[in-house]
Length: 228
Image (cartoon, rainbow, N blue to C red):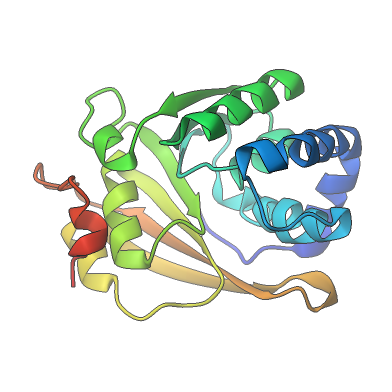
């Protein structure tokens, strides 16, 4: 599958096409934000660009009918906007905080999306035979620096699949972790959100080998002692 930089005009058209569902999601997000501590971005126009449009930017990186997993789902970005514009996708949402899992389940039900919520730490999921190396695409947004994120995500991706990281900027480091965990070709795709709302980058890593059994290490090692 050949990858191309995001076309934000096309992403905006997808948002408009699904405006009713995005408005339903926005209303739910606003109503639940204080209770669940979901996002610091609360102005509707900012939510639309910084959360919805930015999430949709990765739409073209998901093959048709992909089985996808999101690590650290939080409020459901990018997974929920992606499922709204791509109903062919099935997502497993991995989130360790119960109250956020409760919100995700409510949003999925309200929007009639094809997804399941797994209330589990990513490093536990990466060791679980039900999830390990089972997914076509694993994505994450604003979760952790690249070496830690790779150790959370790559164990979930099947050989030949894709690890997709949504980032605000290109980070130094992480290449050794990617190689050690089975990652291969890496491509970066930069784009600018409208109205000066920020520079973004999508980092796409092809999974070319199997992740060694010792990874993820667990017990917080992924963050405390990242692969250098």
